[in-house]
Image (cartoon, rainbow, N blue to C red; front, side, top):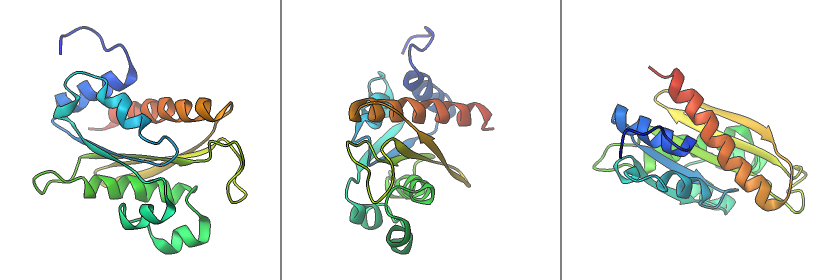
Length: 168
């Protein structure tokens, strides 16, 4: 990678992770692989992107990512705590050579066209796990199914950039 200024938030994130010697793992539901695809658009991403899991099925959120089954039963897959557990789970499960990823990020939500289990279209939760800091953010997005999915990717990357800028 040259020293030119990054052209996208995804590129900035990849360059920052390379600079820090950190890695990232991605768990997606709503975005179906779009988030990890955005990260790996950047040349050199293979140095930091451990991989991604698309856990579209609620059951896979539990079996692959370790989301608490009681939480899923009580609240369904579109919930802040689910997003946080997805981020922490993918970070741990995408270990390379026994080392978990440094950063985990996740998306879950309702892209439409219809509400899901009473959750309105456009409701999205993003999960972030960096060290001991595991958190989720909720956003309400508008537009078509594709608009919502695309906006969820952009919002995920913008929020992750903010977290990385604040991280020691």
